[in-house]
Image 1: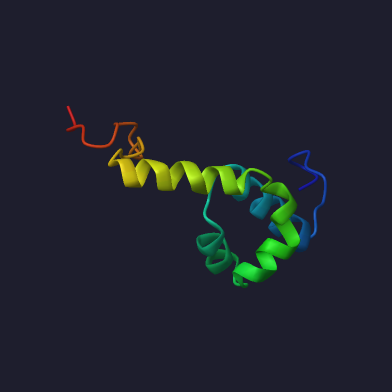
Image 2: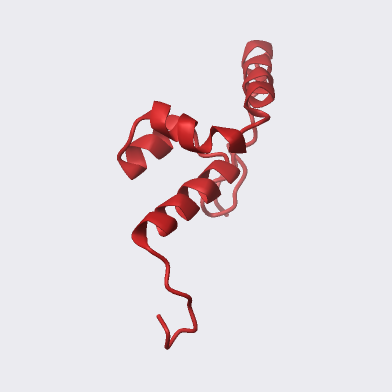
Amino acid sequence: MKAAGLVHRSPCALRNSFATFAIAAGVPLYGLARFVGTSVEQIDRTYGHLLPDSIDRARLALDAFVSGARPAVKAEDGRQDGENPA
């Protein structure tokens, strides 16, 4: 790590950084909990303060579902949902 110019970080610090970035990216808590091997409750207790707008996000998602609107999802190759590859 020194050769790469990186500061040493413990595995716990790396895990915490990963979880924080995942939450910021919008990864659902259930998926994050499964990925890091813990419970949704523990994720919520540890990182819940990072989700102050979670109620608003949930409301918007449910409003879109009920109205029949589908959220725009980009495929890994950058295509919008429903677009055919060129």
